[in-house]
Length: 527
Ligand code: XMP
Image 1 (spheres, rainbow, N blue to C red):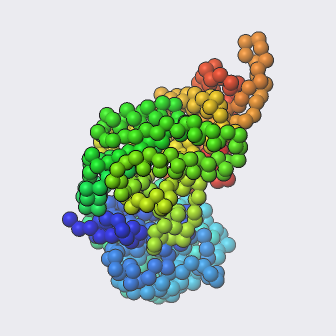
Image 2: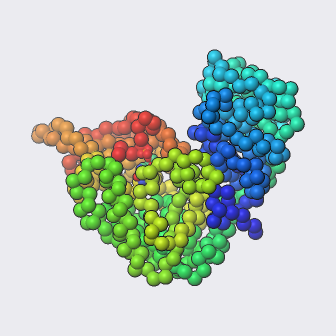
Image 3: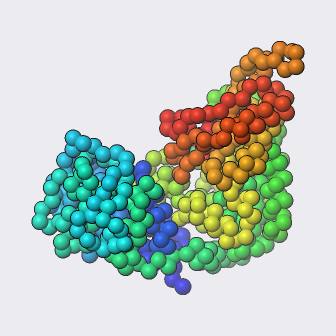
């Protein structure tokens, strides 16, 4: 079994020799491209657009994919790649901006076209090529561009066209360089999967042998080596990421694992109890539960500003965690459920794309000063891969499919000042939202569903009496990556049932709204 440090995780334990790199030029789809490649069982990482040819060679990449991006290749300051990457002999697939860049570097002219193309287009294959093996002559593709390649030199062969884009795909005559103006990674490109597969298997000659099962075995083995006989602490939140980390660690080191669950009083209904039950049923771990509700609520009293709430919660969490961790003897390692998107977004990967830091997602993270060595076994995985891994490790479906829950918990859904009573009202309403969506069989079809309690009162009538009580909102979204999201088109009957139940059963709520905002410009959470 071989183990190579991944490009983005030099200290980690990595794996697959068959790897493809996505050079990121700022596309919203870069992560999607990487996921699509991994779906073909080829290990894939996202790296900076200006990665050097030497670095690529060092990591023996089988193929390179140049992502799309919002810039124009002819603008000064637009992100460029090192032209040396085209001389490595490694197959290159440029997508949208990536294609324009490859053509620009190797003899083509890119222009801003009068007919920008956004959305579905009919693509006609003009010249048969292994990239299009198995495709019919005409197929629907997804376009999203203002610029396009207007002309190519005789070094390139145009492969396909649409009504408004005469050069919708190209290949270089001598070098293994290909370009697609459309996006094969989005599901609206009917046969995009096949095109990517052709690139990976026929052109890059990948065997597609990367499997999550191998990942688990290799990770378990490497954790054993790294930890030796020391003790590892793992913070549990009840979410899928920390549970999968705990499961991996348990398989690797069994009784050397201590889990700490900080019950901050901001958890959902029965959440702490469920986590404790699930964990004690599945693992015989040393589980410490810190009852910290009082500390959190005291510090939060009267605080209305969302950022201030987050900061206070972050600090309180660190204090509680640290105090409990200090009671664990011989603990040298701390395991965290950092995922690949977090690594990418925080700019923590040495070769990763430029940073866009989502500070709020770091709340609940633990500072270096705690003095632990970090173990982050999921830092190369996407959320859906983590879920798959959780199932392979035998975690219950109920836990694996749980919707994400933010570190600051119900505090960012209880708008305005947080109090025990208001949290109780929200908890009750939230439980109705989630359980009715589960009853309707829609929980796994939606990405995140919850209730929000507003600091607003409105007039109502109950029985014969006038009421003046709180308004609550149902938020339910569909999303692939949580960076963009659409509101779920829940059936009216289901919304009616949830609303009736909340108004009848939750004391203090007399009005229910449904949030129909997309992200952007709204966010998923209300604070
Ligand atoms: P937004 O609200 O930014 O949320 O659209 C995107 C995803 O991130 C979660 N989220 C958080 N997670 N700490 C977290 O650990 C936070 O402070 C935080 N804020 C938002 C949110 O639930 C959604 O899944």
